Length: 265
Image (cartoon, rainbow, N blue to C red; front, side, top):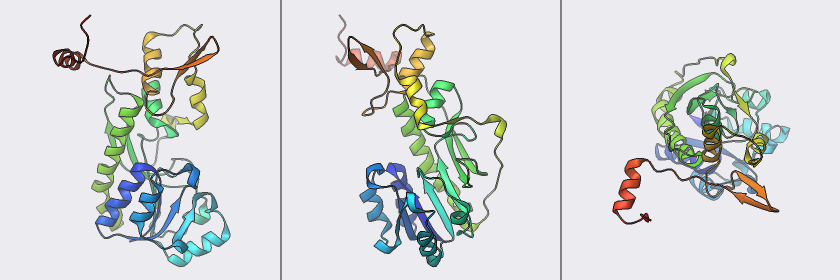
């Protein structure tokens, strides 16, 4: 299949490498702007396409970009952690459709930061491969893989689990995608949850005068523990103090004490 690839971050790079290692044809690449990119150089190197086949995410609606992509005759679009909504004119360029990998169990946690909201809201965690439509993570589901949230998971450790699960799920599902035998399961809108990037602001500042249920506060702090990102904080005496949680279950604590890494006093 002739693939137009839209990717960002470590996961975007890993899926691209997986495709290239299997000899799949990448005819064009769409990237985030430099200031919003991660693993940009690695993705560029792995894709191996010329400058005329590299496009910017914010420009996908522009007519000269639509014409240039149409001339490349891509069969399918693949989106991985790509942060731009796609319009019908762009989606119609692909005879086999456009698919996306989203690190959530859709329709739960559409939009931003599903690793955070699965912990805070207690919603199912997992990864989904789905068709792209004009909405945000609303297209028909192709495949899913659930992920167990451990009591010691933080936003950071859960994110890593979701990344690895996404790589596995894509590898398992690609033969169906490449053969055009993809299932299409409509999402259940009555189960949907959705979050914007800005929603983080309402949980990040911990009000020292507010009463919290202990479990709720722990879930906020662990969901926002994801070094090197800032996470939750409180304000006092003119200072902003950031909070991170470290979790050790009983066996881990015993092991650390046995190895002398924890002071007994």
